[in-house]
Amino acid sequence: MLEICERATLSIEQTAQILGCGRSLAYEMARQGRIPTLRLGRKLVVPKLALEKMLADAGQREPVA
Image 1: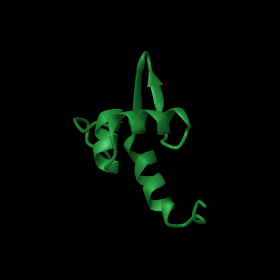
Image 2: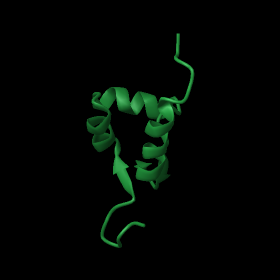
Image 3: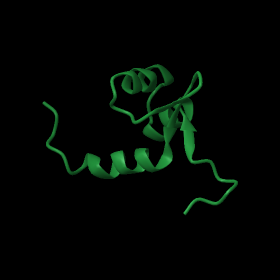
Image 4: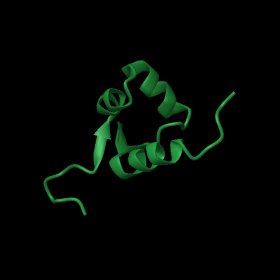
């Protein structure tokens, strides 16, 4: 369970750092729906739990050709 002061979301920039890619690629992946996002007003954020699930599930799928 998240503590009250811990954020439940990440910025696209933080997500890019975690994924080891650039900010532009992270925004493109978010636009394509390859990174789970929420829009809070004008800000695009990535739910931490959804990103963790996406990464955990990544090894379960068939390789992309």
